[in-house]
Image (cartoon, rainbow, N blue to C red):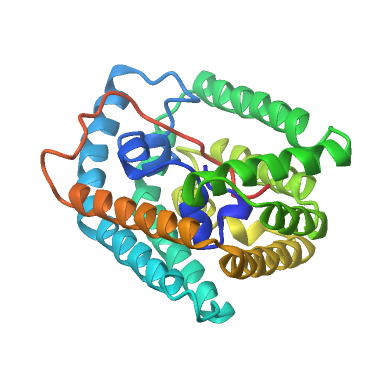
Length: 301
C-alpha cells in the first residue's frame, strides 16, 4: 500500500513492514496484477504466471539493490545527531523512490494490458464491481467519518509506524505529530474522486478492446501514468502534504533520544540487509502461489 503520506522517502521506513514480509507478497511487488479482482481462466493464469516469474527476476536484479542503497543513504542522514537534516536532500530521496516506482509500472504495464485484452465482458463487470466495493469501503473508513475522528485515526497510524522504527514515542514527538496532522490538507475525498475518474476512463477504454487499434497504447498509458488525470488542485494538495511530512521528519530527527536514534539506525541497516539478501538470490525469490492486483488506482490518503 503506497499512499500519499508514504510518498516521502523516510516514510518507506515508516510503513511498518520489512522486505522479509512484503517482498513475497505480490500485492506489493506487482500491485496492478488482476486476479484479486477478476476470476482468471486457466489460460490467463498460465500467461500471468510465466510473465510474473520474469518480473520477479527483473525486480530483484534492478530495483532491490537500489532500495538497499537508498535506505543506507537515509541512514547516514540520521547518523549524525549534531547535523540537522536537509529538506532538499530528503526530497531527493523521495524523487528517487518515485522514479523506482515509475520504472516498476513501466515494466509490468504491458503484462497488465495484455491480460485485460483477453478479459470477457463478465470478467470486466466483475473487475469494476470489486473496485466499486473497494471504493465504498474506502469512503466509509477515510471520508465519511467526522473530521476529528479522521484526524485521530491518522495520528494513531503515524504513531504505530514511528514506533516500528524508533520505539516508544516521547510526549514532544506525539505533539509534533499532532501539529503535523492538524496542518495536513484533507485528501481522502480527492483521492477517491481521482480513483473513480481513472476507473471510468479504464472502463471506457476496455469497451473498445479487440476493436480499436489505439486501445492497447491508451490503456498502457493510463496504467503507467495515472497521475496525469490528477487535477491541478489535487496536485497542489499533494505537494503541500509532502512538504509538511518532510518538515515533520526533520523535526522528529531533532527530537530523537540517543536510544531512539540507535534503534532507528539498526532498523534501517536491518531493512537494507534484507534487501541485499533478496537481491538476485535464487533461494530468496519466492515461489509464485497467487497474484495481486490493486489496479486502476493511485496513491494517496
